[in-house]
Amino acid sequence: MANVTVYNMEGNEVGTMELNDAVFGVEINEHLVHLAVVRQLANNRQGTQKAKTRSEVRGGGRKPWRQKGTGHARQGSIRAPQWTGGGVVFAPVPRDYEVKMNKKERRAALKSALTSKVQDNKLVVVDSLALAEVKTKEMQKVLTNLKAEKALVITADNDQNVILSARNIADVETATPATINTYDVMKHNTVVVTKDAVASIEEVYA
Image 1: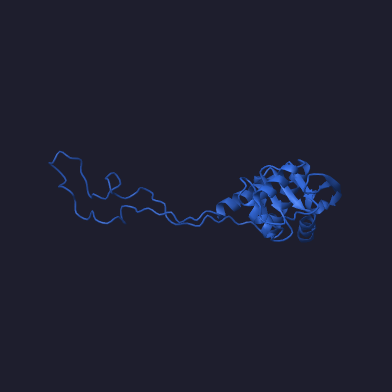
Image 2: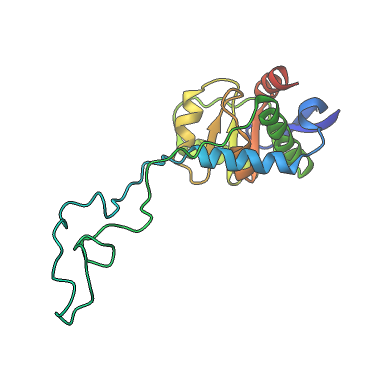
């Protein structure tokens, strides 16, 4: 089991903690991590874009001029793609971008992402994260003390003081053990996690 240093909100060392190798010490599977990131980004796409083809644009039923003798190129409809106001060639239509990935693969990808943060010394464990009130300045002060930039903050439960204090800080997001995902872990430079949240993650994923 890997040992990590536990800090308080002032950034001082207050002890160490053993991490479960079944979650934070697995063999990193880069392919699954990549697949999980692609899956999340693809599944976030709405897929509702739509443009009209020449068969869907209103008008254009009459041939604009006769076939021969005008000096113009032959035309069959004013709604052909080369006309202003005409249809779009190979127009986009609503579609589903969903990428499937089974539960076992998703869990393996998340474990790989967490392990990579431990190996890169980018996982910061805090003994507790309790703010007396909603104050962005206080949250920023804590992150500065922990030397955490572009951070994902994981708390054991939906602590509204932490969530609301962090939401106005650029490149900082919050999550709980139930909502963490591979993309968010990999996207942020540092993962700040409370001791209680570590225990919850190990309980769910070990």
